[in-house]
Length: 285
Image 1 (cartoon, rainbow, N blue to C red):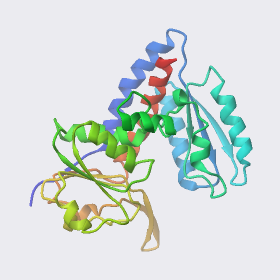
Image 2 (tube, rainbow, N blue to C red):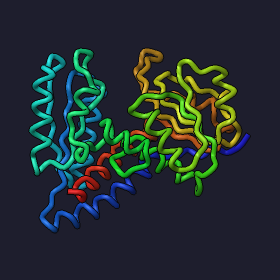
Image 3 (cartoon, rainbow, N blue to C red):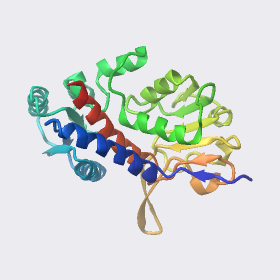
């Protein structure tokens, strides 16, 4: 048994946000006011919470935020028109389309309408292409937040074997490329993968983004490995609703070298990098 370090994402994010706040203050002294537009479609309770949190953090840092709320029955053309208006609005530096969207609306189609130089979450085909080619562009906030957390544990990432559970274009795919760019050896696990447990046990860094509550247990983990839990799963236990990650945290203590909790792990870092990317896009204009 070893002592497992709990990587407190909230504390790390709070410190990072203070650094961003100083930079925002300086750019505002030049008469430039960083502004992010947040588009929220539907009645997803988690999305409503995330949007409120993003707005609150933006206000605390000094970044202006505009919230555009639509019902689940919103017309796709109406959303496209809004994105076009925001693309041409010089006072808006960053645009975020909150996911998930209702099933009647195609996320990829709409996100690709966002101007790449206003794509704060790096999810347009243009920016994802830049990431995969090694060119400069916006990078997804969650992936950047995860890399930041890893660097608080590891002085060097070069040569480490990173296993990523999940291949979504929002987390798994961009994260795997970001890790490759950091010179890690990367394995991506997906629904067709075999011998998952054995592959995971070879990882120096194990990152789970599959949305399965407590899927990862001690049997998946090499002793001393760093575990990043991206999962946000709502479960009901003993008549009470709670949020748990993809990793069974209690089960892995004493085996993992370091682990992020849920909540207060990756989530706060995602919001912090939304602010970071907004500021970066403001500088680029």
